[in-house]
Length: 74
Image 1 (cartoon, rainbow, N blue to C red):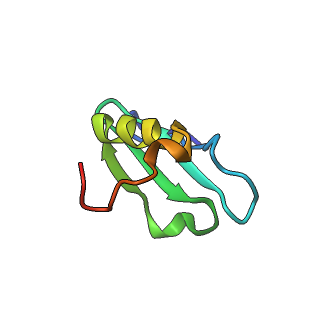
Image 2: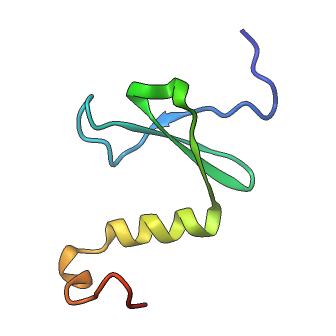
C-alpha cells in the first residue's frame, strides 16, 4: 500500500494509558489530527499547531497550577 503525500500517519499518543482510553495523533505541516483508536472510522479532529501546543502545555501543568480558575477566566 502506498500513502499519498497528504495521508496522515497516526501514532499512539503518549498520554494514552490503556487500550480502552487511547487516542492517536498525526502531525501534519499546518495542524495536528487526533482520533479515537477504537473508532478510527469516525474521522479525526484537526487542531492548528498553536492550539495543539497550548493544549499539550496545559496538560503538562500540575493540576494545582489550574486550581482556583473558573471555566470562564483567562
